Image 1 (cartoon, rainbow, N blue to C red):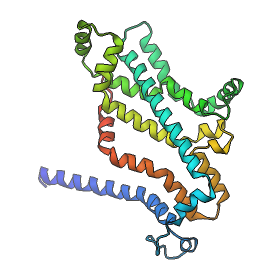
Image 2 (cartoon, one colour; image 1 turned 45 degrees about the vertical axis):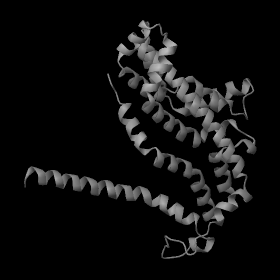
Image 3 (tube, one colour; image 1 turned 180 degrees about the horizontal axis):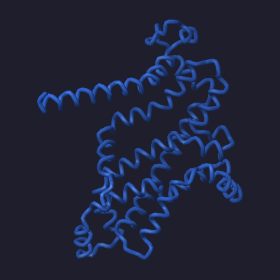
Image 4 (cartoon, rainbow, N blue to C red; image 1 turned 120 degrees about the vertical axis):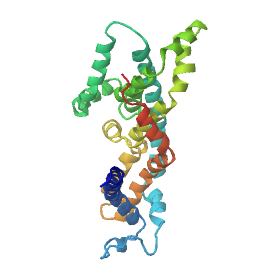
Length: 278
């Protein structure tokens, strides 16, 4: 077998494995989509009918009549917008400090920040609840949104690695023209870091759009529930209505799927450019 033939066989095998894996991952999604468009009777048909006959779109309409899904959606948008903004801005500022400023204990402080990612969330739930309860933040969005403005360690790490790849000569040239650190950050670093900022924004969007643990612990009023918590309550009240449950899950997934479909190229590019660079 020639070398080119061997490479072709390897590539073909790789694509076959990846294709098979993709199908395995798509089956639950397709099953959920199919079920969300079925009537209650069609769910129990055997053999399974993947394409409903007829297609019933009424499940998505009924969501907004049997439960306050419009309120859930608005609440989710509020949490996501402020969460993404706070996470991107604070992480970029912290990453800029770690990448460009020289101060005693910088590396140790950065290591301490990264080590917080190893602390399980279950360890901090009770202390966090006690603190937020003492200052009167329970049943508000503050316990969920305020921490977003204090630099997520993972996002800070990604942005720092990208900032380290930006030549220091650009900063020095700007300083010769009289630019300060803040101006350099906004006029040089951030414009050059758009791919990295985009990937951090995408990660933050997925995090806050699907946020469940925070609302479950800190929110008590149903009119403040996001989609994740609202769907959980909805499923418990519609335990036998599988088409409605799948329609609710599909409704919550649509923004994430559309976002990835639109920004897929930027998503992959961001993963590449935020790699470790020294």
